[in-house]
Length: 332
Image (cartoon, rainbow, N blue to C red):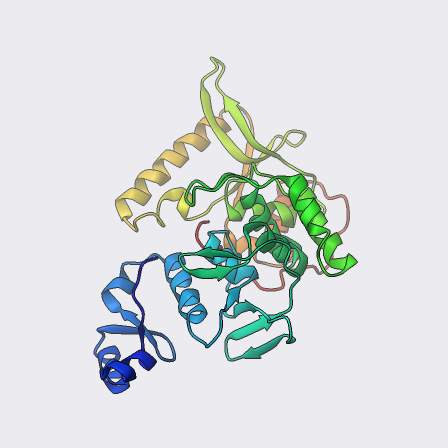
């Protein structure tokens, strides 16, 4: 994230003038990120959606008179930890001598610092472990699980090692209340590094909330000759049922937007499914749109699984997601 911000306040000092920046924005030469902060439009257009979100947060963090420390979903975006659904607020750590407050899209919240504040590309953020723990303590269960699954895996994009489950449990003891500690421990205990995408993690959390039996993750299927045919997201052996979350990245459409690339990926995926299906298993597939629907929706995830013959350990209530997610940031 190496974009150079243009600040209106600095333009006044060097004689450029705020009105000049505004005219350049109107002409399409600049993009206005927030009041008084601009970036070159050519640079902005070259960024992927998750990179644009990081730049938006960086712009908010670098304005103001004092240091601003990003927390929770805002910190997660800077770390490359997946977040589910839109996060319109920019969240900061409230100074020690103040309570939480909001101004426009900026929100300051009180949090106990469990580990030292980190700096990424010059942006102050809560530590990687604290960021995942705060999400576990303050967000709905199914929104927190993708983040916790992620930090239990090595982050090859960021060059970061996995976090240890025991260390996370110990750190969670420093959370503010018994309720927050219990919420965090529940997410930590449920988290599984085998989930390979935010969509898989989110789906697995919903399966748990809805009372479906836990699936086997990343089950390998082989031919009669021992050749690996592929791995599946979810597998319920008793029902001989494979569950697959279909995310855009899986088929390549988020990689470069190329139609040909996506078609090739779809053909490859179809061949993989046909080979696994030939072993005698059944398939059920879903996407973000099905996962985001309430459990009683006829085309929602819960009803898809019920029609596929998956049993429930308890009756489905009116539980739904608190914020229907169109997808997950950074990857699907």
